[in-house]
Image (cartoon, rainbow, N blue to C red; front, side, top):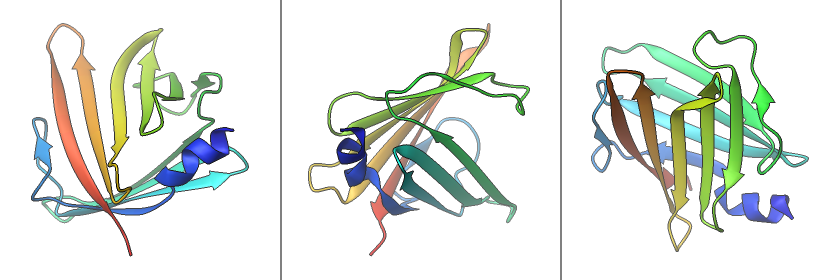
Length: 139
């Protein structure tokens, strides 16, 4: 059952800025990631304070291993999908015109206390950038 596979990822995660590595953009001063289950729908809520103090809040939701979700509000991407790759990896792909332009691989540590998010952004005809965010489970 997907709910059982999702359960270890649920909770509030706090960014460890010291262990994180950003190729693109300035690392944030602080960030939290909250993952919730709403009847099999994974809800991701990200709150971030940028280096310049700007606060960003973002939310997206998808059914793990479910159909691709069409997005209408964003001009950058038009679809999102969320899949499990094994028991400790939850991967989302933001797509545009059938091509993956952003991928976030969430890997849960063996002890379930660390979530490493490797986010890869593909800029067409330019380059790919990778940001690695290490989150610790909130107590």
